[in-house]
Image (cartoon, rainbow, N blue to C red):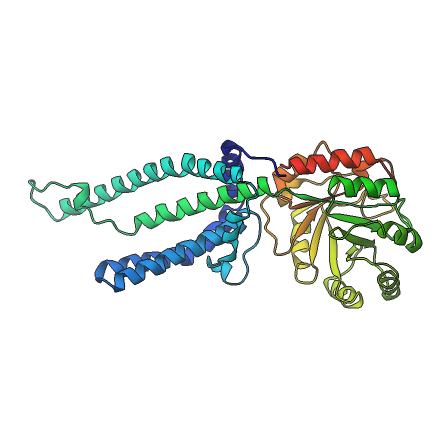
Length: 396
C-alpha cells in the first residue's frame, strides 16, 4: 500500500517538477494557447448556437493540454500530437492515484495553490487592462465625466493566460500526487545466490539482473542461472546482463534461459542494439549508458529509438575491469531536467542512504542497484537488499 502524501508534500514536489520541465511545458502550450485565443475572439463576435460549439471545442483544447502537462511534469517527452499540447490518455493519471486519501490530499493541495494564484493573477490582469483602457481613453481625449469601471472593461484573451497557468500548476500537482502514490520500482542486479534472490523477491523488486560477463565478480553460468530463475515468480522480469555479446552469445543465452530482457552494458551502437533485439526473438533490450558530461546525456538520447529501456549509469574508473557495478554515482543534476521517450532506470553508486535523494533529484521511475547491497564485490547481503527496497518504497 502506498504511503499517503500530505498536501504540502504534493505542492513542493509539484512545483519542483514544474520548474524542472518548464521549457517543455511552454513549448507544448504554444499551439493550444493560440487556438484558445482564436476560439474566444471568434466566439465573442457570433451568437448561439455556434458560440456554444466554440466554447465546447475550447474546453476540449484545455482538457487535451492538461493531459499533456501531466506526463511532461512526470519527465516524459511528448510524442505524436502530444508535442503540440494535444493528448488524452494521460488524464487517467488522476484516476490511477492509488488511495482516496491521496486524491483528497491532491484536492486540498490544488485549492491551496490554485485559488490564491487565480485571484492574484486575475487582479493583476484586471489592473493591466484598466491601465490600458485609461491610456486609450486619454489618447482619444475622452470626456472627463466618463467613469471606467471593471464591468465596462472588455476582457480580451488575457483570461486564457490565467487558465494556462492554472493548468500548468494543476498538471504539476497531479504528477506529484501520482508520483507519491505510485512509487519508483527497483531492479536488483548481480543476483548470484538463493538468499539474495529470496530477499529481492520478498522485498518487492520489479526486476532481477543476472550477469553473464566473466570478468565480473557477479558472473554466473547458464546452469546456475537456470536454477535461480526457476525460483522467480511471474511478474518479475529476469534480465540477462551482457557486454558486447556476439551473435552466438545472444543465441545461447536466449535458448538456454527463460529471460525476459537483455541488458547491453558495452560499446554497442544503436544499430547493434537493434540487431540484438532481432537475434533475441524480440525480447526487451536495455541499453546501459555511462554518464559524466552533458554530451553523454545527449548520446544516451540517440539510443532511444533502438532500445526498449535506457539505463543511466556512472562512467567506470579508468582502471576498472568492468563497465558497471563500481559503486560510484554520477552527478544527478545532469539529468534532473531531462525527459525521455523510453522508460529508464537510474544506476551507479546507489545505496539505501542516497536512493531517496536520487529519486527526488532525477524523478527516476526505476532504480538499479548492485554493489550498494553487497558486503564485498559479488557478495550480496540479503539484509541490505531488504533495506534498499524499503528505501525505494519510501521514495523521493
